[in-house]
Amino acid sequence: MRADLLRLGAPLRRAAALTDARTPASRDRALDGLRALALLAVPTGHWLLGGFSVAAGDGVLHNASPLSSLGFLAPFSWGLQLLGLFFLVGGYSAAKSLERARERGSGLGGWLRGRAVRLLRPVLGVAAVWAVLIPVLRTAGVPEGTVRTGSVLVVQPLWYIGIYLVLTALTPYCLAAGRRLGAWAAAPLLAVVAVVDLLRYGPWAQAVPSWLALVNLLPGWLFGYQLGVSWAQGRLRRAGGAVLLAGGAVLFALLLVVFHYPASMVGVPGAARTNSHPPSLLVLALAAVQCGAAVLLRERIARLLRRPVLWLPVVAVNLSAMTIFCWHQTAMFAVALPLSRAGAVPGLTTEPSSLGWVLARLAWLPVFGLVLAALAGPARRFDGPWPSRLWRAAVGAGAAAFTVYALGVV
Image 1 (cartoon, one colour):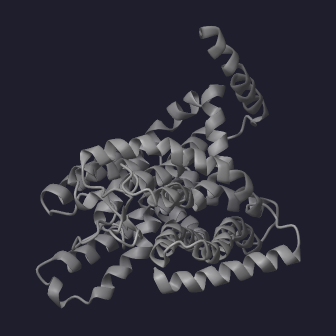
Image 2: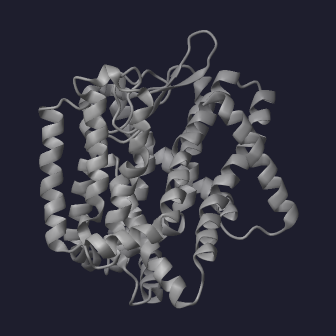
Image 3: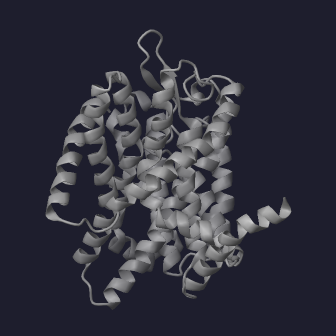
C-alpha cells in the first residue's frame, strides 16, 4: 500500500520540482501565496455559507443562507471573508505593475487597458455562456425560478470586478498618497467610514438619508488596496503591520461587543443591518487584522513556499484565478440542479437550518471542487486573447444579452 502511494505521488513530486525550477528567483512567492489564499476563500465561503431550498410542489430551487438560522456560523465568515487581503495583494501588484510599465515607457492608458482586458475577458465569457444556457434550461423544462436562482448566483461575485477596476484606475492617486503619507495613507479612508457609520447608526440615524451608506463603497474597499500600494512602496513595514493587527483586533472587538455590530461579515437574509453592502467599519477592522498579519508573516510564508510541493498548488490557483472566481457558483449550481428533481438531498437541497446540514455540506465541498476543475479547462479559453473578430462579437453579444436578463432578476 505504501509503495502504491509512493508511485502515485511520484508524478506530483516531478511536476512540483519542474514548476519550482521554472519559477524565477525574483518571484514574490509570499504574495502569490496570499493571493491564492484570498482566492480560495471566495468559493469556500460561497459554498459553505450559501445553500438552496426546494419549494414544495413546483420544485423551484431557491437560494438560502444557513446564517438565517445558524447564527453560530457567523464567526466562520471572519476567516472566509478575506477581501481585505484580496485588495491588499491587488494594490501591491498594481503598484509594482505600473512601476514596471513606466520603466518600459508605457503610458497609464495602455497599462489600464491591459489590466482591464485581463479582468473582463473571463467575466464576459461566463456571461456569454449563461446567455446560451438560459434558453437551453428553459427548453429542458427547468422552472423559470430555478433559472433565476442560477443567474443570481453567477452575478453575486462579479460586482467585485467592477470595484476592482475602479480601484485599479485610482492606482496613480494611491501611489501619490503613499508617497505623501506613507503607511498612514489609508487612515483617512478609515475615518470616512467611521463618520458615515456614526451618522447611520447613531441616535440621529432616523434623520440620515439612506443613500448616505453608499459613501462607504469607495473608501471601504480602497482601504486594503491603499495599504497594498503603501506596502509595495516600502512605506508599510513590520511595525506598521503590528499596529494594523493589534489596532484592528481591538476595534473589531469593540464594534462587536460595545456597539453591537452584526457578527456576520456577509449579508444575512432578513437582517436589518449588514456589514458588507456597503462595507461597515467592522469590515475595515477585519481588513486591518488580515493586512497586518500578512505584513508580519510575509517572510515566513515565502520560506514555506520554497518547498516545491507547497508551491505547486499556489501556482495552479494563481493561473486559474479568474476561472475560479467567475465559475465557482456555476459549479455549485450544476451539482444542485439535477439533484433538485430528486427531492430533499441533505446538505444540497434541504433547508440550511441544522448542524446536520453543515456536516452534509462539508461533504459536498469536494464535489463542487471537482466540477469546478472540470469546467476550468474549457472556461480558461476565455482568459487569453480571443481568436477572431467573430468570436469577440459572439461573446460580446452573449454577455450583453445576459446583462439585460440579469438586470431584470437580480
